[in-house]
Image (cartoon, rainbow, N blue to C red; front, side):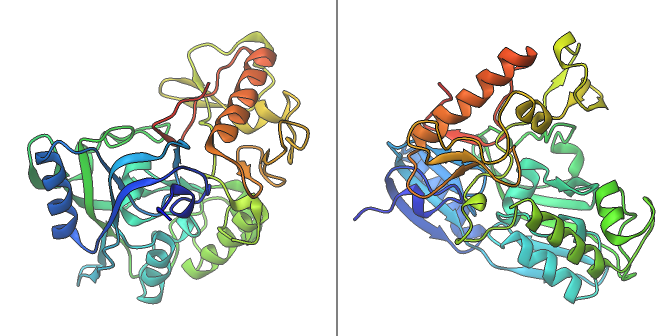
Amino acid sequence: MPITFAELTTLRVGGPVGELIDAPGSEALVGAVRAADAAGRPVLVIGGGSNIVVSDDGFDGLVVRSTGSGVRFGPDANVTLDAGVQWDAAVLGSLENGLSGLEALSGIPGSAGGSPIQNIGAYGTVMSDVLAELTVYDRERTVVETWTPDRCGFGPHRQSVFKHSERYVVLDVTFALSRSGLSRPVGYVALADELGVAVGAQVPAADVRTAVLTLRGRRGMLLDAADHDTWSVGSFFLNPVLRQVPAAAVDAPQYPDPAGTKLSAAWLIEHSGFGRGYGAEVGRGVVRLSSKHTLAVTNRGDASAAEVLTFAAHVRDGVERAFGVRLEPECDLINCVLP
């Protein structure tokens, strides 16, 4: 039986893989991509498969899975991670080696190579806050380069030059951390409340990790094969940023953004009639919103990619009818689109 993307992604949907190879380091990763490009063969590079939806037709090309596991600690509190390193293992490893700075990003699924693509963030910290440099393969120029963060195009709304682009392959990432043992200042109200401290306080970094894992667990955002609320891509939709908020949406939580005003997608979804766990009566009922978190579109066991996309479009359209706001997916759609 051919390997399918249902076996390679956290959403557990998607059709057959043309050919899968594992790249256990930067040299193998570059070599595989460069050879396929030279042959004119379609290439898809993946890590933990936590932020992609692949069609039921799959991908008829070469899928290169980054599996490099190198973790290198420097004398100056830096740590360099191969792209294939499992993200949460890297966070835990940094804490066990007396380094703080990544603790608020505990529990995020995926690999280190995906962290700059999404500019992952949670509980008041974004990856770019502590990124020192990264190594990138430019497929267009066929060169390997070391980049500083200013080249990455980081910005609000999870922006980066890597997102929704096939040009660059991240090979490794280096973070500038701290040996103080204390966390970065706690910058998120819910996290401060969980810790019982004021916003801006610093506490032992290990305590922040424990609190973050607790908060993520309550929201079904820690991968668990036995919990279908975690069979997802995380937050399916971006929080919309609007130049002008429609009159129908003025009651939604609003946050200032350089591009306008950011609204809470979760609030818009819930107040459009799509509560937690919604979907049992939609189609076969095998795609539903998480029972813990309305931004997560979940596979309840044997969903197809088409069913996921149809359900997500159903929610998107309902929000647009109710509030005049059109939600956009945060995940990458491979060989498919929202209908």
